[in-house]
Image 1 (cartoon, rainbow, N blue to C red):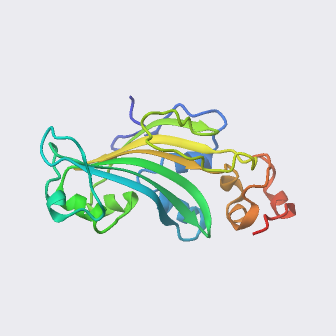
Image 2: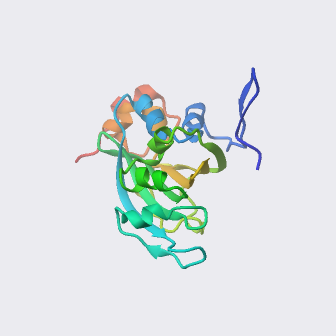
Image 3: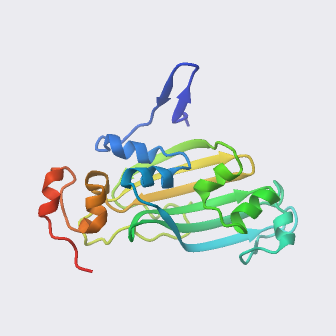
Length: 231
C-alpha cells in the first residue's frame, strides 16, 4: 500500500483515493495521525474527553503459549513480560465526547511489546493519541480505507461493533480504517464520525442539532432555523 503521507526536503504531500463526496474539512480529520483528539478540540474550540466503552486485554505467559485474559491494571509480572515474543494485546472501544455529544466512536486493536510502554497504556491509562507524545515517538500512519455511511461491521478485524448513530436519525456517518505504528506500540483502528453535519455546523451541531435530518450541503445560515432536539 502506498503511503498516505510523503515528504521531501521541500515538499509535503497527502495522497489517497478519496470518495468524491468527502470534503476538505473532512480530509483533515481523516488524516489525523494519532492526534484526532487535538484536531477535534481545535475545530470545536472545546475539550474532547475519552469515555471507554469496553476493553479486552490479553497476554502470553511464554512464547507460543495461548493468550490469557488480563484484568486491569495487569499485575506487574504480566507487564514485565511484554516483548515481541510475548506481546500484550488489547481490543478497545472508546467514545470521543465533546459537550456531551459523541463526536467519534473508535475501535482499536493495540499490540504492545515493551514493559514501560505497557505501563503507560495499561496502568497510567494514557489514551492512544497521548501515548505517542508520552513515548516521544512519531507513529507511521497508514490510511487503509475511508467510507461514507455505516461501517461494514462484517469486517473480521473488528471484534465488536455498534453503530455510531441512531439508524433512524437521518444522519450520515463517515469512517476511516488505519494503522499507527511506533516502536513497541502498534494500533489498528476504525473510527466512525456519527454525522457528517458536524463538519458543517460545528458548535451549532454540537449544541443540539445532531439527529435532525438535513442535507449535508444545506447552507450554514439555515442551522439556527432548525428545532433543537429535546433532552
